[in-house]
Length: 295
Image (cartoon, rainbow, N blue to C red; front, side, top):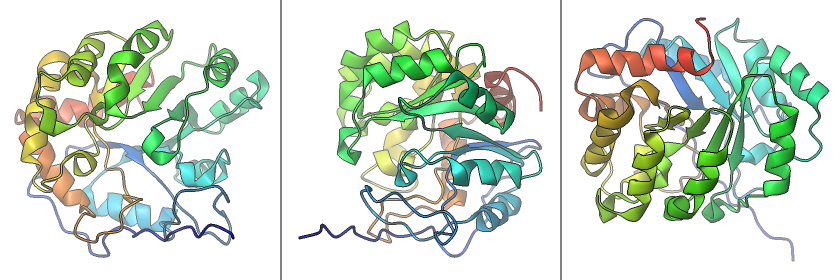
C-alpha cells in the first residue's frame, strides 16, 4: 500500500508589522520558495507536502517588512533539484542569492555554473528527525567540487548530535553556517553539553550561526522567552558572525497555533539582541561579510 504524504500548513495569510523598523539593507538569510508545483513539482520522496509559497508572495512578505536582500535556502521538499531556487534568484533582480543542495553527481564545472547563477552556499540537512543522513563521502566530494568558489557550508542537524559533530565541523576548511541555533533544546539550559559544543564552535573564526527558527526550538511559543538566554550568550561570543533568518514559509507545521508570523520573529530579535547597533550589524553587515564582498 502506497504511503500517504501528509499536507502541512502554509504561512500565515495576513502579515502584521513588527514593532520596530529594520535597517536599510537588511537581509533574511533563511527562507524557502515553494512552487508553483505546476512548474516546480516536489520530489516524490518527501516527509510532507507544503502548499505553494511562490516567489511573488515572498516578495510581498519581504517588501512589507522592509527586507531588501536574502538567501533562498534549498528546501528538502525538492530533493536535489535546485531549479526553484535558481529561478527565484534569476527573477529577483539581484536581490537574492541561493543556498543549494548537491549530491555525488556534482561536478566542478556544474558548481561554477551554479555560482554564476547566484549560488553562494551548499546545504547539508541531516537531521534524522526529518529523515536526513550525513554521507561523508558525498560531503567530501562536494567540498572538492566547490573548491575555490568561496562558498559557505550550511549545516542542519539535531542538536543532540553537536558534541559528536564538533570535531568534524572544526575540520571543515571553509566557512560553516549552522542553522537554527544548532537545534539545541532550550529546556536543558545553557550548561547542556550540546550548547557548550555550539559555544565552542561559535568562537571559531570560520563558524557562523543563524539565530533563526526560535519557533521550532521553543515549546512555549512566542515571544520565545526560553530562547533569549541562548541568543544573548551567542551575541556575547560571536556577534560579528551571527545571522538572522525568517525560515519562511515555516514548513512542517500541522498545528495553526504553531505557525509564526515573521513580524513576531523580528520582535523576538529585539529581545535576543537589545543593542540596536549589534542588531543592525547582524541584519546588514554580517551577511555581506559572509559572502566576501558588499552588494
